[in-house]
Structure formats: structure tokens, C-alpha cells
Amino acid sequence: MTDTDRRRQPVTDGGSPVPVGVKIGSTRTVIAFPAPDGGVQVIRTLTCLAEYKNPITGETKYAYGDNAAAEYPDSVEFPLRSGLPDSGHQTERTAQFFDAVVDSHDVPEDSVVVYVTPLSENTTGQENLGRVIADSPIGTGGIERYPEMLCGAIPAFGDGLEAIETVFAAMNLGATHVESAAFRRGEQVAPYRTAAVSGNEVDRKIISNVENETQSRVHIDINTAREYKEQHASFENFEPLTDVIQQPGGGRHEFTIGRSIMDPVEEYLDTVVAHFAGEFLPQLSGQYQRVQRLALDQPVVLTGGMACLPGFVEECQQRLGEAVDTEMTVTAPDRPDIAPAIGAQRIASRLVR
Ligand SMILES: Nc1ncnc2c1ncn2[C@@H]1O[C@H](COP(=O)(O)OP(=O)(O)OP(=O)(O)O)[C@@H](O)[C@H]1O
Ligand SMILES: [Mg+2]
Image: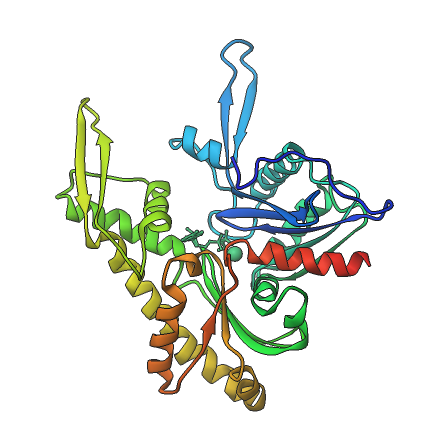
């Protein structure tokens, strides 16, 4: 299941390849390509797959994405759970997943693909990810890669590629890590990355908090914790959450949790702000003092799924201003989770032309 289940024919104008933007993230994969109505259609799905057996033929089959996570919570595999694919197995599974998604949504093969990559020194992982795209059916018209953060910031600056003409700073709030950099007309400077704070870490803390808050009566898995966070965490109007679990011996247990979700999210934001103000900005000003001044004339752009939480951007602006003792402006694209693929798709459109 994805944001759009529309299956329509791709638009090609007079036979030129179709521009496609791709993000294969550790948690979610997002693909953006032209819709028949002239807009952009977006596929957004969990980067996961689950193996099952056809009970009649005994054949091994696979379910993908959100369906796999919902139907096989016990055995679902996220091949990129810990980041870029290091091993042959992870690469193979990622390719299998990606090819299935591309195929089931009829993403045009005759396409120019721009895909995004996170900041990472893991060159093997970067190469393996590149191989997944290169060996997939799409991108016969060419394949390019750009930083996830830069692409994610593009929709925050306008309807075109204004971001590429600008000097600004950005922060990408991912599932496995947080990254920051300044961008100078598209060139990335002073990149900073830390895995000490991540969306996944918030999920793990929610698991143990729920256990504590329910006196060990409720144990949730990591996917449930992620859903609690994505659907309920809010800096604007958080309300205690009531849910029901089936108990192993049978019977239902209803429970309500209060601070289990927001405590780790609050801590997450504080840590993110501390890293940006205490590590990234000093590093940037140490190397590029004037660039920093120019960059901070623009709003700091937040991208990545964690910036989707209601009120996150405003709260981040407030706390960042306090941390650096100057007024700061923080902004985000409309949909920080899908923005990297949207930005990549715009670059692909430019390349096609
Ligand atoms: N709509 C949403 N609301 C709240 N949180 C979200 C939302 N979408 C994603 N997240 C959370 O944001 C985090 C990052 O999501 P994102 O899709 O940007 O990660 P990713 O690109 O797959 O991960 P990585 O960059 O680490 O490979 C995850 O922890 C996810 O649970
Ligand atoms: Mg990401």
C-alpha cells in the first residue's frame, strides 16, 4: 500500500525519457514521477519485505512495503535497517524490494533517474546502493545521484530549483542518523553527521517507556513504536494514547500511555539542537565563516521524516534560537518525508531538458 495506488500510464512528451526522483531510505522508499494530469505522483512505502510460502504449491513468495510490515510483523526484514547496504545479502534484498516496487507501480523504464544518498563515508554502501538503481529496470536514459539533504531542501525554496542558486544550511532528520551541511549554489560544504541521535533511537526508547508505564504489561515491537511516534507525537496537541493488545493467553488488554511517546521526542529535539548549535555551526564557522553568515541569512531547512511531527519546526526554531542566543529562522518543505524524492525529480526534469 502506498500514498498513491493510482496506476496510470506515464507521461512522455514526444518520446523523451521521463524524469524520476528516488530515495531508498532505511525506513522508507519514495519515488516521484510525472502524473498524467501534469503534476507529480508519489509512491511512498516502507523499505521492507517478508518471505512466505504459497500453501498450495510450496513456492517461496515475497510481500513488500507496508503490506509486508502489517501482515508479517514477526518476520519482516528491513534490509537497510542499519543504513547503506554493506553486504551482498542486503544489496540483493534491497534490489529485490526496489524492482518489485518499480514494477508494481509501472514506473517508466525509459527514464532519467536522480537518486539521493545520505552523507556517509561508507563507500561500499554507496556503491551497493548505486548498483541497486543501475541494475533496476528504470533509468535507461541516465542515472545521477545528489545529496538527500540538498534535494529535500529544494521544495522549501519554491516551485523550481531556486535552492541550487542559494546559500543555506540544512539538517536532515533520518531514521538512522542526523546530518547537517551548508550548501553554496548546490555545493555541499562542512558536512556533519552523527548517529548519536536518530528516529530509530526514539522508537527504541518508546518501547522501553511503554513497558515501564504499563508495569511490564505491554510489550510493543519496533514497528508499533514507530507508528505510535509517527501518528501521535506532536508538539502542538499531544494527547495520551489508548490502545488494545491481545494477550498471549487470550483476552484483550486496554492500556493508556501518557509521556512514553513525547519524552523521547522532546529529548530527541533537544539533542538535535545541541548537535546543530554545538557541533555543526562551530565547524562551519571554523572553515567558512562568511559562508555561515550568508547561510544564516536564509532559514535553516529541515528535511527527513522527523520534521513531519506537528509543531516540530516551530519548536526547533525556538530552541535553536535559545541555544545560539540569536534569533534563528527554521523552515521545512511541505512534506519533509517525501521532499528528497520531489527535489530529485525536479533535478531529473532539468537533466531531461
Ligand atoms: N509522517 C511522519 N511523521 C512523523 N515521523 C515520521 C514521519 N515519516 C517518517 N517519520 C520518521 O522520521 C524518521 C526518518 O524518516 P525518513 O523517511 O526520512 O528516513 P529514511 O530516509 O528512510 O532513513 P535514513 O535517512 O536514516 O536512511 C523515521 O524515524 C520515521 O519514523
Ligand atoms: Mg533519509
